[in-house]
Length: 175
Length: 175
Image (cartoon, rainbow over the protein chains, first blue to last red):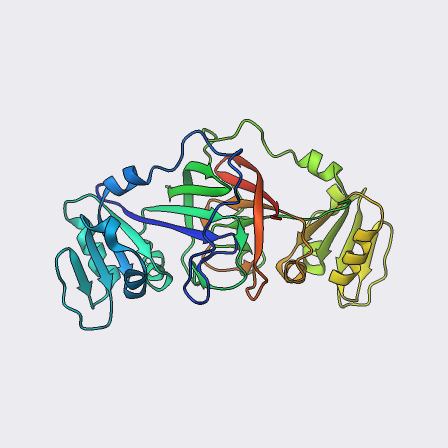
C-alpha cells in the first residue's frame, strides 16, 4: 500500500471530539507523568509523514493553521469559496475526492476532523490508520467521533503511547 | 474511602458494550501479543476484591453466573422476582439502593452492566473506578456504554494494561 488516510484526533473516554459549543479546552492530561511510556508521541515525525490535511470548514476556522503552512490543506465546505495558496476548498463529495487523491503519488493524508467530515470516511471504510488519543475525562455531552450506523471494522493495535494520563492508540485495519 | 463502586467492562473503540442483538462474540483480541505489557490483567485478583456484583436482568440471564457463586449478586429488574440464595432482585431505584449499600462494611462493588443499568450510576457520578477494556474493533452500531447527557467527570489514569491488542484502562476520579 502506498499513501494512507490517517485519522488522528483526541476523544474523551465517552467518545466526543469537542464539547457542545465546539470547544477543546478539556483536552488535557491528568497531570501524572508516572505512567508515561518511554516513547512519547512524535508529532513532528507524524507531520513529516503527511503532505495533505483534510478538514471541515468549522475546524479550518477554529484551528491555528500555522502548523500546516507547508501542507496541502483541503477544506470541505458547501460555501462557494475560492481556493488560495496551499488551501483548497472542495464543494463536492469530499470522501470520493480524497479517495481519488489517494490513488496519486504523495505522502500520507491526515484526516483532521471535525466529526461531520470524518463520518463519511469511516462509513466508506477508507481510513487506513486510526490514531486516537483518549483524554482522561467523561465529557458528558458533545460532538461524537462515531455517529453510529457504521460498518464493522476489525482493527489491529500497532502501537500505544501513554503521556500525562492520555492514552494514544494507533490502529490499522485487521486483515 | 472504604468500599468502591467499580465499573469494569469492555467496549469497542466506538463505545459499544454489545451489538444490536446483545451479543458479545466480537469481544476478542487482534491475535498479536507483541505489544503486551509485562503485567496482564489479573481477573482473579479483581474478583477477590469484590463481594457484590450488580447487573441488569438481561445481563443476568445472558451471563454464566458460575464465577459469581460466592458473591452477592444484585439484579435490577422491574419484574416481581423473589430473591434466592446469593441472588437478590431489586425492584426499586437500583442506583440509590447501591449508594446506600456502599455506606455499609464490605469489599468493593462491581458494576457489571448492561448499559441501561450503568447509565444511572454514571449520571449520579457514584462510580469510583472505571476499568474499561478497549477492544480493537469499530463495531458500527450496538448498545452504547455512554448514553450522553452525563455530567463532566475528570479522570485520573491509574494503570494501563495491553493484552492481545486489547487496551485496559483503569481510571479513578480526578481530585
